[in-house]
Image 1: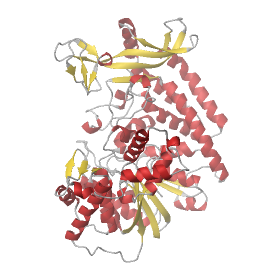
Image 2: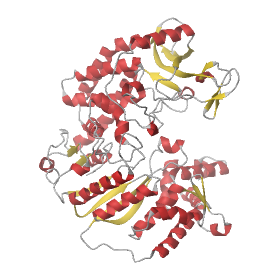
Image 3: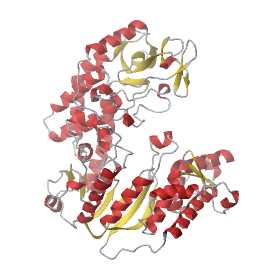
Image 4: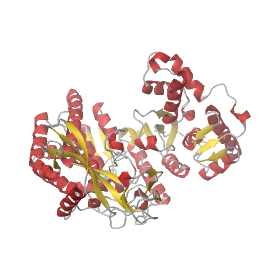
Length: 602
């Protein structure tokens, strides 16, 4: 069971492994993803549905995304339109498009007087189409065309024609996620794209088979963000494809308007490949008739999965009996890191889902929601109490968690311990792909600490250590990490190590507010990093750099970077584990130092 199922990875992997799974999540998008992934649809039905949708929407789509080739005059389909914010220079009052100005940090220099200007952030800002990219079948190549004034007016006129298209769905006002007051989901799309998306959705609703319709909805929502104004135009996409990579509903100063039908068809091709692979696996297990159970008894007797769209706090004995689940794996809400339901309004509005904001376990900065740390603490504590009730005696729950706030960590761990669980061990799980946020932000957390707890009726061990003794151990633990990292370490690495120390000692009375002042009495803190100022304290034979160098020299069987990363983490105790970006950075520095490829280096 996963009591905070999210995108349903736990349940999907359980099904692939031939296990029965229970998925619980307050977010209807969680159910939508699991069903869209696991529904077994024949390839012919899948292809027929995509072909029909494409055929019925293409007339509208082509009329809005067609241009005459500027070389051969043949009609060609537009790949995307680049929209640029237009701002007025603070100094000379000249208006200019930011796409054609030099960027200086976060400001744009006026082409006339070179004065740096800030862009204005609002969904109602002044922006115009600046460029289009299209492919000509006759010329057999792509073109990027800078639009002239008449072409700009023509595109804007078309936009105004479709400006009455509306989409139900209000976004929650929250300055942190860049949602303005009274902002609608429809504000995140251009009128053209909103019109085409509505046309695709209309075609999906006409599909009589509910399973096939569910899969088409899954493809549709998977393509929606790429059809929005949230897609930044980055150097002609030479650094990667179009993606919503910035947290929050940030509409970039230079954005891309991509044909939604093209996005839908491209996403369908990827989903088709994934479904073929998963369907083969499900067939091997004899589970080709995928059907979620309506009751727990039905799950036990026949079906493979039970999907519940409720908060874990609303799950009663009648729905899931006590002591009935063998194992739990979960990734609980990250406090104030991710307001899930607020983000999911983007997709839920297209599916006509109602979102239960009141009972969401989250900390939110929205002035319109009373979601404080105290509310989070109360709800997460009730959630783990219910998990304890549902789990069988002497069974395990594994928890992964990301948060740079010691306060939130403390709330979570206390909730788990007070529910009755006993800490047993921790692993560090290396991600296959480094998340975009971790690549863009130097202080971001990467990888997963997987913390294992057990439900046991035996008496729990308690800490016999006094606060003063534990304070010394905390300082010593931080010094060991800093020494290993040769005097400088990120906060996330220090916090993880100290949290594990507290868990190992079964010590839940040491307040998080004491940790930072305690460390500051011994070490220097600046811009998210801790440092040892006394060089005598950094003497150590085993350091992170030496560990990486040793593994690189000794490992013969693995030459790819991901394999090296795994080998390095296997040789480092979990409480010393640095962020994965630090590991990759050290490997690459070593390669550069040796001036050789990895293959030659070995």
